Image 1 (cartoon, helix red, strand yellow):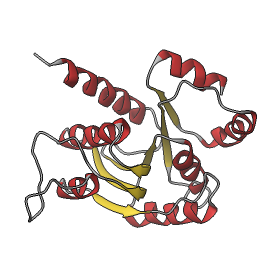
Image 2: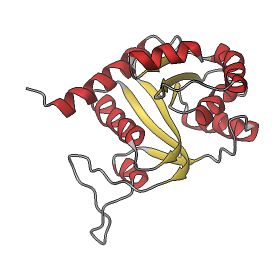
Image 3: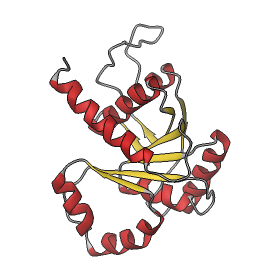
Length: 196
């Protein structure tokens, strides 16, 4: 029997695996780059960690990770990872301990073309099939990177139920033409995603 917390994790993993399956032009075992602006201690980081853990264990993805700002890990995986001094590893170090290649990509704004070029080059270096992102800055950076690397596919998970301002709604219309797949974390989020 699966406990309630695991049930929630598995729903998120199932949604992501389902979204990956509908992206055109990617192989059955995908090289997925998880892209976050801030690799801190919030729920999204835990969600990414869960995706890495379950989808790579199932042989569905070969995970990679890129971030702008590193941060500390406060929640532990079932198998604890500690540094040589016995202190818990930060989230970035834990991903590396799980065998996930990690790299910093500086993203100064959501329209940072240099970051997009750097991300496109990283995707080429690692032969990435798909980028999975969660927030506007990294989402736009990934979509802009498609200009420099046409192989890239992008999946965006929307975590917000707030209305966007007029400028962001306009830029979403322009940028979403490049979008491959979107995930809303709830029905209200889906409605707001459509409205935004």
